[in-house]
Image 1 (cartoon, rainbow, N blue to C red):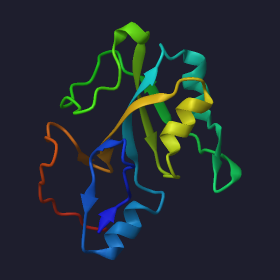
Image 2 (tube, rainbow, N blue to C red; image 1 turned 45 degrees about the vertical axis):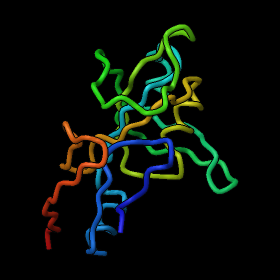
Image 3 (tube, rainbow, N blue to C red; image 1 turned 180 degrees about the horizontal axis):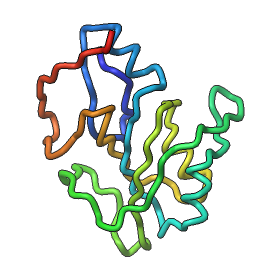
Image 4 (cartoon, one colour; image 1 turned 90 degrees about the vertical axis):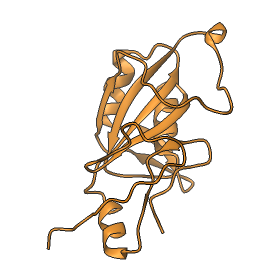
Amino acid sequence: MSIGRLDEKSEGLLLLTTDGKVSNHICSGTVEKEYYAQVDGDITEEAISKLKNGVEIGFDGKKYKTNPCKVYKLLDTPEFPERSKKIRDERHGPTSWVSITLNEGKFRQVRKMTSAVGFPTLRLVRIRVGNNQLNNMQIGEVIEIKLHLNK
């Protein structure tokens, strides 16, 4: 089974397991998940501050305020494999990349958060779950890792 999900437009690290306890632990809200999001426009410090403090998004037909999280603007464009479907090019205006690290994981949360502060997500890549990093893995590559819970 997969641990968590990535929506059809998202990319990146996906952990698979046959151990329900490991899955429950990672989904429990105690394990960090880090995402790199390419957003529409040159994101402002004000928007980053709002993201850090939590923003109101819609979830299950209700308003939900996200928990405080770690957010910073990336100075360099991350290097990921080219997408088969191009998002857009520079003719449509600038974009910027941010790192967002969450402990929670509501449906399409990162996309909703960046939209709530006026910078919709164009590309979303999960780069880390706990201590497990995407690093230079290629699309479709599988690496076996050992996950152990402290008992």
